[in-house]
Length: 357
Image 1 (cartoon, rainbow, N blue to C red):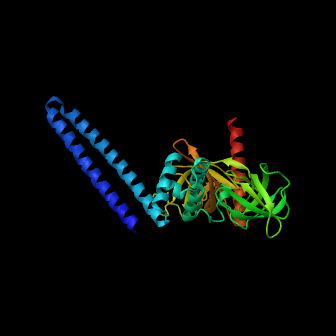
Image 2 (cartoon, helix red, strand yellow):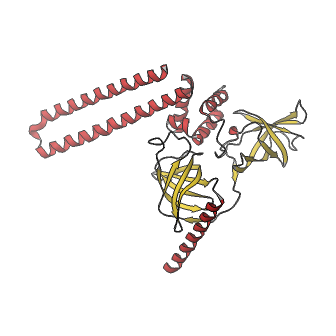
Image 3 (cartoon, rainbow, N blue to C red):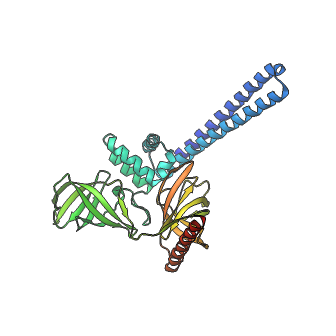
């Protein structure tokens, strides 16, 4: 609370400072016009005044947005229990990654990429700091629908296979993870091994992890330690026909997201393509990986109002963001209706192409 109050006082002091700066700016502009009004025609004088006002307005708006983002970052860092040192570290991390500090706290994919880079080149103690911040942000206990972006997100007790042999994850930190096996891995330390797991029944993943060490476990069996995989390969369970689509898709977030202009606001997007398994679209705001949403769209002459989908990834696309979403947990009847609509849309597209050829 004290830090939040101090943040509020800092914001108000900054706002007063900006207001005083704007007043000084307007006085200087007014004085300059008074000194030169005899030499300027009335129309030119009016245009210059208008341009000065527009420029000052944009400057003031930019300053207000910046102060607003800083205030929201401080408030969220305080609410999550981050220390001042950890908050300053997160700000520096965001600066190095070229993103906003608030995005580091709210976008799992940005957090994972930035921390992976920091762990490669950071000083001693970086791994402990990353783990501490991860736990404060809740990125160590993700919802089941969240895609696996790094093996640093894994939980002890997760089952997986190592070279087709069953194992169980025993411990995880930011440097490595340990796996309990009945037999030693059939490979020497230093060699990348193929691991497979089903992540919370959400999807199947193939991992390429370098074996660090293997030794007998006190309770019997073997303990193998692996380096992390920062790009797990997601194995799609089924291939779906994907068709080009036009029109608007409206997303209503079902999970929390600090990036919305206002809480629980819908997000209008432009469709690129759609399949029975997911869709791609373009947005003006960056959708965070793991965001669960209801999607309303039209395809193949059918209207769908509440398709559940999860964001797998977002990438820059022109002046917006191209997002890839996968449908999740659809009832059987709705899934069949969607697949039929996609097939119908594809047949309509082919017929249209033949007519125009």
